[in-house]
Image 1: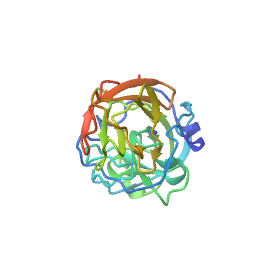
Image 2: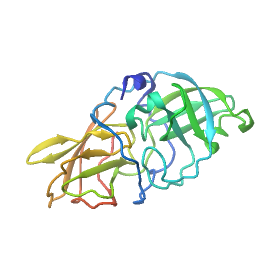
Image 3: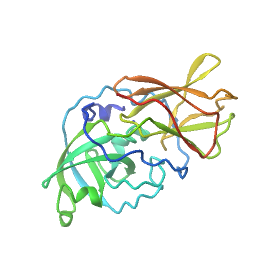
Length: 244
């Protein structure tokens, strides 16, 4: 979306989070990085409140964010501290953040490399909802919440994807993604997660003339089945499934 640094931060409370999909454009990007087990974010959501701090930065809705999302009109977003970014496991997760002035619910789309654990770097718009911008840095509490999204999840197949090398990113999900698998010859195959938020099979999903059948696991353990057309590199396609 989870690494142990996030276990005390996540919850399934049905609280609003931002607007619809981060984007349904094909403008995703991301630098290469290491891959790890896609099941690294599988911890249950706990609901525990975490103390921390918040600052803000100039977020323009660009697709140059660490989570690899395309251009978005969303403004209530945040960059996660490096320890809790957990190799992109927290990407797409939502947090309700409370500050001196009020509350805001943000979606994690970026990484703050210099931020210590508990430090969220909010968009300027989101920060203004919890504190006076002149403060610059304020104490906060936060709790992870389910994102409010419209419709089903969608999937972006990274530029360069083919039946021989396939990278899939999940978007518009209510809960952090713990694991992505696809069906091949009647067996579900795990796709390790890269630190730039794509689930990858280095050998590719192979020919899938009837579409790619996916099995997705959320951070609370929910499992849903979905399917998308055969590999269409650089495209965002809508699925039919969503977490509860």
